[in-house]
Image (cartoon, rainbow, N blue to C red; front, top):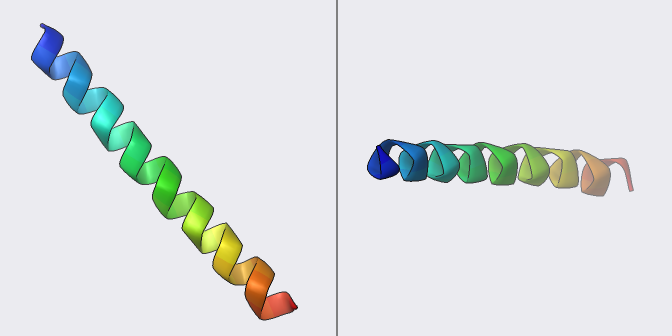
Length: 31
């Protein structure tokens, strides 16, 4: 189904953004 594929892409984008934000916070805290 197309809807299921879109939901998968949506969840993947959210998880990627969450991981990138966590890495960015670690990078900022390390200075």
